[in-house]
Image 1 (cartoon, one colour):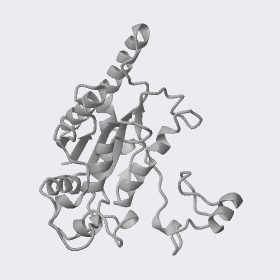
Image 2 (image 1 turned 45 degrees about the horizontal axis):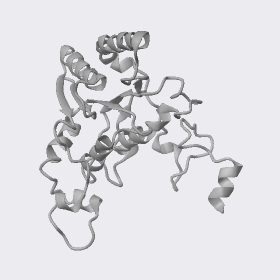
Image 3 (image 1 turned 120 degrees about the horizontal axis):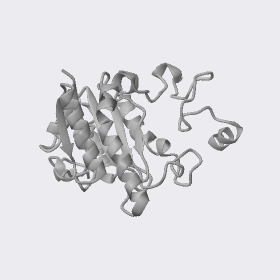
Length: 257
């Protein structure tokens, strides 16, 4: 049986983002999945990693060492188990201030535990979460044009790259994100009616998205073999995103300065 974890990072469960997460959970259950749904805000998740979560030790607080020690906080151990058990993870969240909400990034800080879900010798191709796949279902307030490669809001896909790379670090496969644009409460008249119809179609189509999971395009990443001993992209290896690319003359001189 496929085990699906649905994570919601939005303060209002009655929002479209909340309804979209509900549609994902319903579609997964209808497909016979074992579904775990987690509403981070409603559950009062604390996104701030800090010494108070752990037994006091000598010296400055080192989050990685504290996590690796194996004494996980009581509120984190079950969430780590959710990730370990999941075959699929669907993240539902808006883009705020050009990135995911702070509570979701805090979930990464606290739940993606060093020594359990990754370590120096087990990351990327050798990550412990190999076999798990993830999908981002994302809303933006701006239009699709503004969120495109030449849009003034910035390319929304690139804004999501750090989160995708985080999951790739754990060994996960990441699907290409699904974005719904122009979701805000300032529409009126015909524009509001058009938005409501568009959002209803997204909810109606969620069963098809979940059912077509295996056919959905994947976010391409370089395998470990594409990097040299220093961790740099080998000549001739493909560059899939601007974040990992072959340096040109200008960036090379800046790096060597």
